[in-house]
Length: 315
Picture 1 (cartoon, helix red, strand yellow):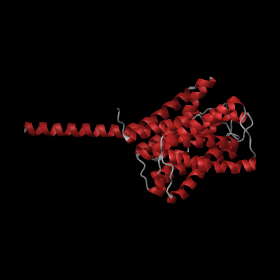
Picture 2: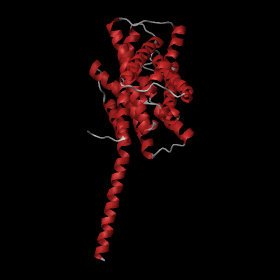
Picture 3: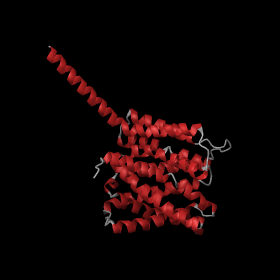
Picture 4: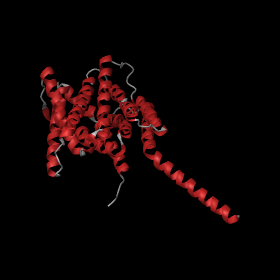
C-alpha cells in the first residue's frame, strides 16, 4: 500500500477542493434560468448535502458529537460559510460569472493578511511569489467581450463573500475547530448554515426546483462543490494550513475555464493560456519549493563534505 505524507495528502485535497468548487457557476446558472433565486438554490444545495453527509457518516461510523465549548465557534463559522455562498450566488445576478470568479480570488490575499496580522504567520518569499503569480494568472483568465463592467453592488458582494470565506478558512485552521473531524465539521457547517437561507427565503420568497435538469444541478451542487469540496478543503487546511490551501484555490477559475472550453465550446485565447501557465506555475512553486530547497541543501552539504574529506586526504 502506498504511503503518502500528510503534506502530500493536504496538497492533493486542496487541489480536489478547488477543482470541485470551480464547477459552481456551471450548475448554478441553469437554475437561475429556470427562475430560482439564490436563497432557494442554496437551501436545496445545503439541505441535500447535509442529508448525504449524515447518511455517509452513519455508514462509516463517523462521530457526530460536538463538544459544548466548540458550539459557539461552530455556529459563527457555519454562518460565515453560508454567507460566503449566498453573497457569491447573489453576485452572479449583478455581474458576469467570469468577473465574479476573478474577483473572488482576492481571498488568498485576505487569508495571508489575517494570518499575518492576528497570528503572526511569517510569509516566505515563495508564498508571496505564488500569490502574485496566481493573481496575475487569474486576471489573464478572464478577458470578457469588452463590454462587461464592474458593477458596484456585484463587486461589493464578491469581496464580502471572499472575506467571509477567508475568515472561515482561518477559523478552521486556528481555532478549536482544527480538532473537529473533517466530515463532522462540514456536516455542522451546512446544517447550521441552512438557517441563513431559510431566513433569506422568508424575505425573498421560495422558488421550487423544476425538471430533470434542475434536480440534476441541485444534487450535483450538493455533492461536488459542497460535500467533496468542503470536506477536502478542511482536510487540506488541517494538513498544510489555510494560506497554502487558499493559494491552491487558483485552480477554481481554471476548472471553470476548462469546463467552458470542453462543454460549451468556448475559445481558449493566448492570454488565457498564459494565465493557466501562471496559475499552475504558482501551485507547482508552492508545492515543490521546500522539497527542492531541501534537495539542494543536501547536495551542497554532501558536496562540501566530500570536498573537505578530499582536501584532508590530500593533506
